[in-house]
Image (cartoon, rainbow, N blue to C red; front, side, top):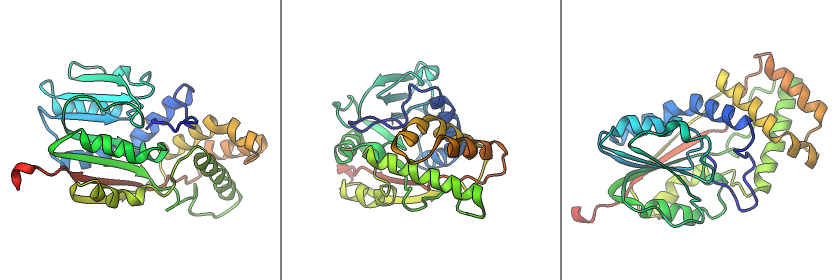
Length: 271
């Protein structure tokens, strides 16, 4: 969730809204994430690497699946929000997937959610994750594709929805300026095949409206407020109005589609 570009990750974990965002992201996407994890057969005794973990929910879910005889390595450039997920089979490590040497060992699963879209050297990061897999191990990448569905309110039925979409456009501009690739998600299947993985598949999950989506929008807007106003992408008055509209609970706020793609590292012994 939080591996950053060299000029700084837009949604800094040091801000208090980061915890609210992690909770909302877990509510929105954990069901989809663990549907894929379970399909890939991650079970007791497995070894998993959670890249750019951010919060605790995926770490805990993986730790439950591998059990005390397994191992979960959780890494991020900022581990401060991860400490509540400590367990005997969990190791927390500060690590930048775009710059640091890969951790030792081979993994049955390497997973990253909402990470690579923000990383400038995505090619290197992908190589590091593929190299960390054991033969037959799975790489599961999940990334947003804001260019595929760019609106906060796809049903732009009135001024409140129009304002939400205007502020979302400002958010996308800020992301692009920080090096985010807003159409990265759709390329994941091709990139996994190009990296030498087999049995590649992908799908997408698109929350259209939910309390968690509303909470995520509020926390995100609060977190990027100063950047929006400094760049002239929104005024304080417009942001206040949007936050008031969010608080009514009547604004259907969508996320960008999250595309999940997975592939297996070939097992040379099978040839």
